[in-house]
Length: 78
Image (cartoon, rainbow, N blue to C red; front, side):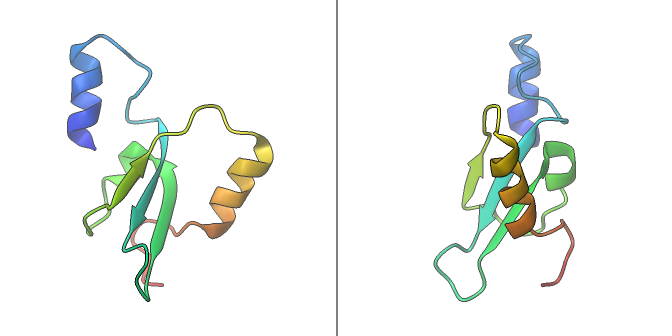
C-alpha cells in the first residue's frame, strides 16, 4: 500500500494518499476472515498479507456505517 501512495505522488495525483480510506480483506473464505476499513496510514500496520485492497469512491453514509460495523481495528486479535 505504501508503494501505491508513492506512485500517486510521483504522478502528482493526490486522489490516493495516506489519508485515503480503504478496505483490506485477509483470509476470505477461511475460518478466520478479516476485514479492515481505515486510512491507508493506519492499514499499513496490518501484519498479514492482504488478499484484496479496495479503495472505494464516495460512500453513502449507510455503506460507511456497515464497513465500520463489520471491520476490525488494526492490531486487534479477534
